Image (cartoon, rainbow, N blue to C red; front, side):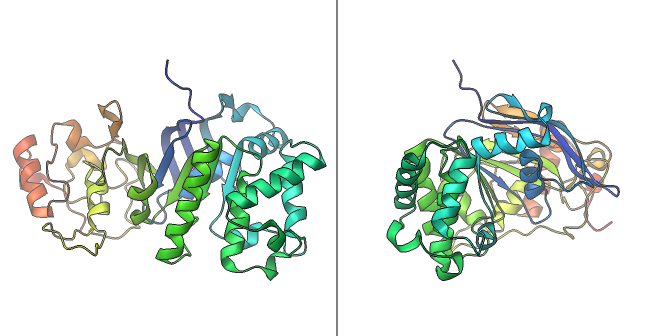
Length: 349
């Protein structure tokens, strides 16, 4: 019997008065799973998190369905949704310092979060606070009576993590939590969250544009571009077996310390070039065909754990080299789909 997902997002669409920010985004997060939601800045990752939590600005309109622990959040009032998410979801923000109130002692803030999330009495709160601070590798005596401005950056990070998991949420959402950290500190923070996850069994939705962190921590990866889901797959090794052109170019652009035989790839065009009608990556994709800019591709299930939205791949064009050069990919796609090079649409339009 399969486990029911902690988080299930179905056909989530978010619009402003000017444009569509998210278009039919669907994914799940299973119990104990670490799912990375990746993409360039502006791809829709943080909008997705805000929509899940009901934290979108009033000027944005959203449709679709979000379930947390099998509860349809769309059927709750704003107050009910806030309280429900407060009890079932922990949030770690990029600006962790501003997630704390500067004029309130750390211990008092932890107690307030514990009480708001339906925690127990004072004795239970005190015991849980000590437990969660030790999980976050902090000495309770060193931080409980301090104000946030009296703590170091590293201590603030750990307090923010402790505050996010103090109520033992089944789901932890981290939105660009390592974006402002150096590589060494980022690695330590990921290790800390991973250890807490193992101890508590919570699921993690890891929103990031830092591709170096993905293979270190994620069980599954969802790749977004221009508000659309490009590809989703479960990681089976150190190198994700991506097939979508955007995913391959994105992960092929990572600069590695160990030299490799394959060339470093790059994504052509301007990130602001987004197709409104078809695949959002069509105007930048060096492998696009005529239908890419006209019709939005539907998700195509490659395996039980791998889903891709790409017209070329749907037509049977499946590149074999994980990070082949643009020329190799064009030749490969032409041979497998019967599409000549003259029919390929380039980003320079």
